[in-house]
Length: 283
Image 1 (tube, rainbow, N blue to C red):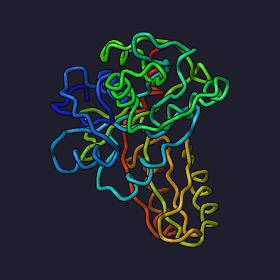
Image 2: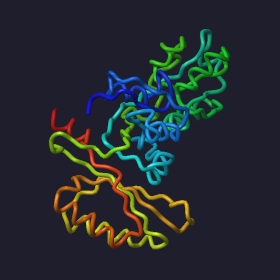
Image 3: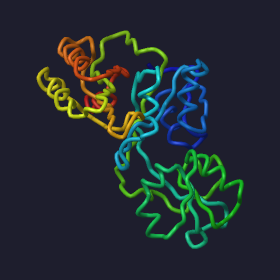
């Protein structure tokens, strides 16, 4: 999958979501959304063919809003994109590190630069997207307010780069997933398939032990597991699990069928090509 007519993502020009879209869908029209819910709606309604949302970051971990939306959404994951994240401090003309008192950005960007912000004693304000923060400070024209965003946002909005690479860890990568109304239907078998499922165990999360044992018994490698409350009670727990393989493979199908006898709800969120494994194979 290399082309889409229209792709929904969070934020406008200069946002990391748009950078991910340009990496995977260089010829597509991009539909900027103000929040993740709008991205899901744009795909579900048919307004956009695909959506791109961040699911985890190497520094701050999971993106909880996306996990909750995926659990209850009829959409499927059909691909993934890894985007290197390099944050810059942007200001209007005349601003400098000495004039800046307040810094605005998406809460994930603020978290990824938390040590830097604390060292400088900046007040912080969360916005819907990094590109929104850049646009807002341009409109305000206030030298005391800066934004954290990709340096491409400075070029688009006519801002100055006050300092580059301010993220707390230089090896900062965000994993994005591609959403679709339909499951992926590759023309050829996946070279490196990865699958995502969600499991609900009601108020008996200890069943996770039995579930994980099933993966081990069938030689299915789990690559990521996340837990979160299932919006019922604090003791009602759900899990999202990534594992290597496709449901068409017998050992994976045995695992998936066994999970249906353990969990109160099992949802296949998608099977798609592992971008990480594909990249490793090509280097």
